[in-house]
Length: 424
RNA sequence: CGGGAUGUAGCGCAGCCUGGUAGCGCACUACACUGGGGGUGUAGUGGUCGUCGGUUCAAAUCCGGCCAUCCCGACCA
Image 1: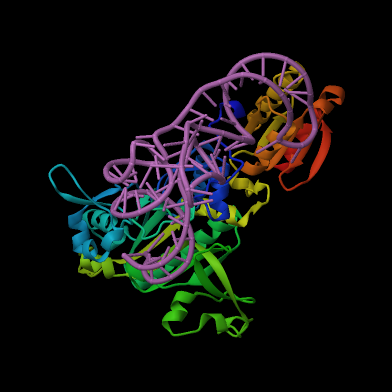
Image 2 (image 1 turned 180 degrees about the horizontal axis):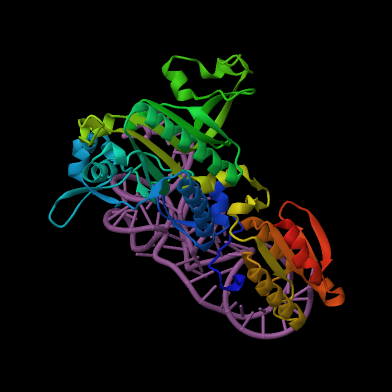
């Protein structure tokens, strides 16, 4: 991609509306723009990152054996009345009417729609277990949207629903999903904790949250410094604990001491049990030929929220430091004097197309700006590697490799491809 | 929904107190210079001052309603 052709409106100053670092950087790096409170347009650069995370999630879901579908965003009232959630959800459920004054809502989650699908199309225990997922836009009319896409009203989420014939089988799928979520977050390279959680309005028996650790997290979690023990303090508050006094106390599992941290909830997995299946009469015939209520699990991971969480954990005073696998581009070719020196322009374009042929995603900064402007932008948007073609190239055929984390080296242009192979 | 704040060009802001020609920096356009850390000069573009109403000869400025946005709280698959 040529920088001069890319819709990439970078800003020197963060707009007044932004408070947290990821929101400021996403605005400054030209990734998103606000349309209304909690509702955003994703610009090309932001969308590239969003799609990369989406791809990682899809790959891991597929390899776990789950199957992808796409359910509607607009859902009829009747389904929601079956589970009583038309009432229970309250104003968070955005309700609309069609031209015949029939009631609908924008889907905040899809238990009703998926359960309806399964009860109508799956009749035997032999077809189980099933784990069905989608990656889709959700709408929740949050009381207070904030922090940009971290808590938007409209957001992109992967939600999946498992259907199992009994508790043991549900437990098995649950653990598979738990493992899948670990793989996803580890692939992105974020520091996280799996936290015992309150199952909230979704209901059900057991649930755990995946928290990316960050100062700006909205949840407070208690973790052991020497074990897997981690719990959302919401649960402890319900038990009447004084959270502040827990810091430094021995962990309940006997290993290590408690630390209080802030976390961004990027994923949540539930064992729902029979709650929805009973309300909606979702049965299959079991081995004995009798109707048997399905056991359900549901598993959500916030794709758009992961973008913000990744930035919260990876930034410095200059801008974003993308984990390489979700960076919008691998390489930025910074051509100094592009519009002026033919040798620079020719070499830049040649290098650009050669690197693309090698499979890299390459940005060529062909603007008529100086080194400072180009580097500032590159650092702001967090491209992992810069190749600088300038005065030195004209004289000695050497270009500089400068990584976003500060490493740099100078090499003859003919060696670059070999060196990059090493990076890869 | 309770508490707090803000709204003037794409972004950051001044002007408001004390009413009288709409301002600054960045960005943007043209030209020239410059070209390894947001460079320089000259000339430009861009505004119903959130909105509706009131006071006044006159309102960005004073008064009131409304709207929007953000922050704290409550809430949150």
